[in-house]
Image (cartoon, rainbow, N blue to C red):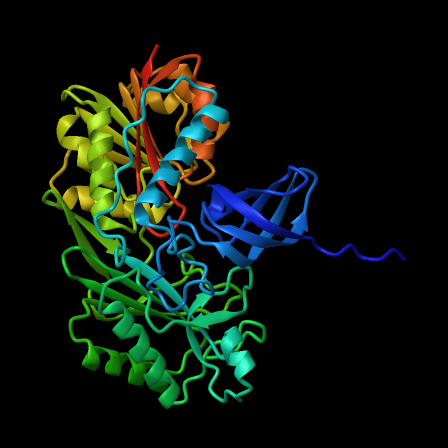
Length: 469
């Protein structure tokens, strides 16, 4: 049996660029690329490799010789252990530069399309406390930090309420203060953890599939409304009411307090009954006088302020005059459809999730919008020639698909009907670029506008306008 090869240590590697998924890039002595998970472009560091592939290495910086001028001090005490804000040690202006660079590189390299001059990325005014939805997990065997392990102490209380350690489905990092959602999010989470611990409420054990408290979701809106949803692994009426009543007593401003009893193997709630314990079963978000109902299962852009900017750009790119038929593909709860409806003759929204379409219809009725229609179903099965014959040939298509992009059959259908204009909103410029390449014979990219929805992370949205050739 051969000896296992040891991973290599590369000394004094200069970090030269930012790559995909929050990793930075250096060059190994043999000329291969090294993807580094904890460095900033401009750093010079010793890199311990953890994986070797044919054309690249993956590694971790273990000793720094020089720190980059692009570095800043992370504000969060959990940075480096929690995987949620991988770029928090990089100055925000450089985060924006690298996000814009990634989009332009993807569109050119993958899409191979001719691009106009890209408009500078639209940064977020708030770079912390910008999210309107956070989900936390309970665990009775929390992740111990290296400092705790090295202290030699015994930890009797291993309860945690926080985030999964990256790559470890059963390990939860206990969070003291998260910088992603504004108060009272941290106060609510910390109160629930302390109260539940003091009252002997068992935190979930993922390996044994046992316990009482499973997950916590907190949603907020720009109108000041708050939703709290507790997911319980099993019913215990006495403990449940004790906890919920005390949450309400401590935070009477909560608009919607709900719970789910979920004893199945995973913690998704989309196939579960959500029970409203106090208040409404929903909260409202507002935008230009439009009100959108958000329930526990609703999809809504998680950065409300930047969602408004994203929708304004989308409406601007659509350039509607008032007599157009618009199709809004992957419409979700119909927010974009309703946002552009005042400038269109008719807007047709299509979405796979029936509950989202139900919300879209209710929101349109609430907002007195009468020129929208919404349909639920698999996009490539609904968006057919027969469907188009019934509802009219679109002049403009707005599409905002999931990270995987549009199915090739959907792209083929768009090419089959050739609307005058397409506005393509994407959270993944790589799959967006793939789709643009398929459309390139018939469409020219006329505008590109990146929008940063997620400061401190490597995620970025991008809006592209395509005009028929």
